[in-house]
Image 1 (tube, one colour):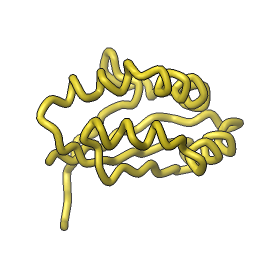
Image 2: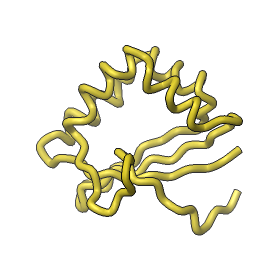
Image 3: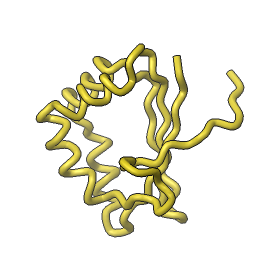
Length: 109
């Protein structure tokens, strides 16, 4: 199992929309995450700084393949078409990143 965290900005005028989308997340999106070996996924909002922080546990053996399987699903592409306009990529993200991956520096179970 690998714990992963990532960050992205959020457009101020899209916060309510983003919250509503995730309060009513489509069952197919949730199942796609399960199928891609993602567990204990949460997204946190820091409204003052206009940031979203996401965390999950990856329980698979081929992260890139699992992420590609999610990306290839038409339902995921429709979901991202709704969510992406709400998000604002951080300036320091690495090439190819939408959400910017973060380094875990402390964990206590």
